[in-house]
Amino acid sequence: MLIGAVATICVVLLVLAFLVPRLSHGPQRAVDKGLGAGQRAGGSAPGFLGRLFQKPFSKSRKATNKSSGMGRRARGKLPF
Image 1 (cartoon, rainbow, N blue to C red):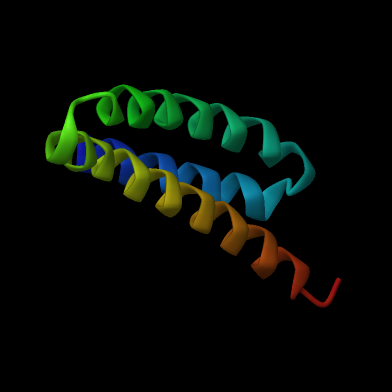
Image 2 (image 1 turned 180 degrees about the horizontal axis):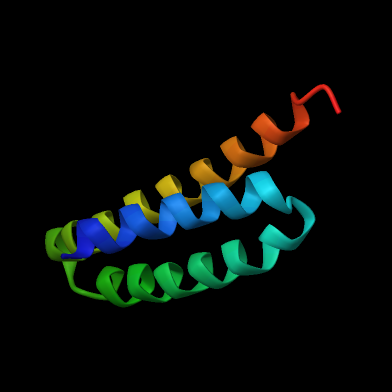
């Protein structure tokens, strides 16, 4: 379920960054802020568990930021 939600968010951010690159920074920051809160909460667990609980959120943040950047780069390569 979480994987599907992150994949959907990535696709939405990709399309949004491709269509309106300047306006896509706000939604990207909002998603980054939400996943960052989850990452901080997971990281507060002690020792190995903290790193284990933090990992899915950090990977999701990385994926959403990468898809947004990819949409903006693709838009920048258009000839018009």
